[in-house]
Picture 1 (cartoon, one colour):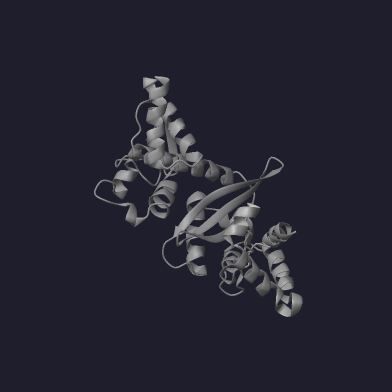
Picture 2: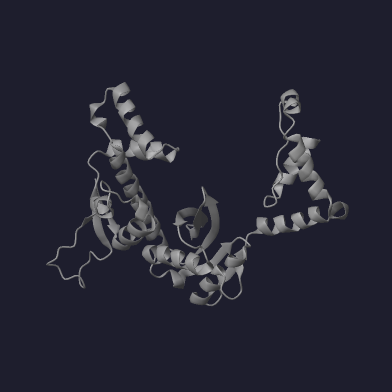
Length: 297
């Protein structure tokens, strides 16, 4: 199977945004990792007039069954190393020699190809739509900050909600850096996005909603008139409910509740007898109070 992918998707998103410098070592350099994508533009061709400026990189999958298996295994949570071992187990148990062997390095290459294919499809979808919106959120996992971006597109009478990508923010995550990373991704996927974007939805964090330098404000400044900015409804509801809980019992309710929960979670004999543990109450998830109240009831 031969596939062609836009140059910017490989150079910018796969090669820069999703390749951390720490991933490089003596065996896996950035150049070697991206060697699976072949530049089909020959040096003798006139780059300015070439039709290959967009669909410029080609990659070849020789064992499509193996590729499908690897992508399926990783899609349900298998690590690259696990996927490599499961492919071998599948081959051994089925006796299908055609499945072949997939080293961890090959699995990594397959996942880069799968990402490139998905980005290419999203790029073509955005190029054929009249407008779209973005939803953005910052999160932290294992002490690393991530920028999560979703795209909502109106197509064939329906609104489709796609997860675009989760970008590791290895340096600072100010509104300026968040905006820079988002713009980098959008420029690679849809060069005309500033003419098409109609809305951005964010959480209520100051760096997202700030009127002067917030991420939403920065998007509004580069977009066409009529641009909308939305603040997550659940986050607003959470703020209202948290204010209500904090004011109960002369502002003592929340402190007493959290102290009681902490005390009960230390009572191992009680937990053993009841076969349940008091759930924690979170100050950023309004529904957690409902779970706590149901547990006490």
